[in-house]
Image (cartoon, rainbow, N blue to C red; front, side, top):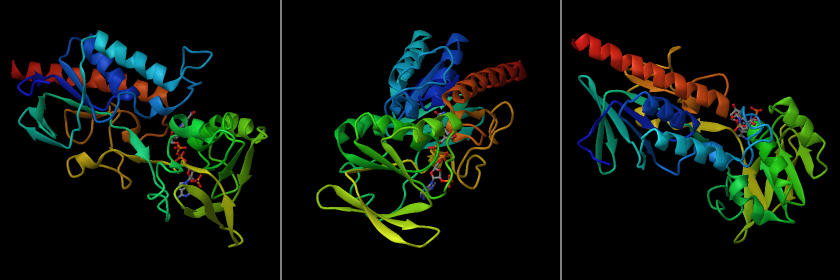
Length: 313
Ligand code: NAP
């Protein structure tokens, strides 16, 4: 990456929103750069199978879909660089994005940094991460062949991954703090009908214990107050998401939980900076909605740049 370049659009994050924005910007002939701190693909790339993304009636694996999106962005001439953006400043009409080894200058910015798993925050969770505690069933599920595992949470992620884990595990206990799942009806029904899945309702995990690896979790029933212990080899945590927006705190308006506020064109409170996908405040977090955001943010950035050029004439 050449730090002397000035880009039309700098895209932060290479998940479905960022890569779609890249496809649109590249195709529109804008000088575009995508920066990603981890591997391209975002959380979608850690999903075994995506069944509700249009165009793939048999479903498509998350990694494969994301490889295709990245290839399409590169086809339109957009580089995808591995680097972390740690700050953003506006100087006149130019944005400066801080990187560990320099900066990138751009005339507009699309933030598509997505979100990450929210930890449970219970004793043992940090200590046993990678030794029985996991946030990615697709990555780690196969290590639990023939073993009993626990999934914490009742949303779409928890239920999708609980179903996935039944391929390997002999038993999957879904521990949910209420007595109703938040997950979509189709997923709920599939999980309820799966003989390998058992539900532990109204219950929270209060600690994760073992020796060198996880051996059991302590539980507390929120209705009766009863405390118990459940032997398990693995704990898969799906307790919701935290937006990756720390690097714009104080620069853009965020919700209390850190999601970026945008208008209907996905412009943030800083003109020229747009936000797309899971990192922004929105009612649905799906690959399809992230892709829609990416396309709209790119078109909005293109309009913003065109208006700037007209203003200069
Ligand atoms: P989510 O919808 O926020 O669900 C988080 C779950 O964790 C909830 O059931 C919540 O309980 C529970 N929870 C939160 N904090 C907890 C704690 N401290 N201890 C125990 N349980 C806790 O998160 P998600 O399932 O990761 O989904 C995130 C977004 O991605 C959603 O918009 C979802 O629709 C989307 N998604 C979609 C699909 C799909 O196939 N369409 C797949 C994955 C994700 P309560 O229910 O009591 O709040």
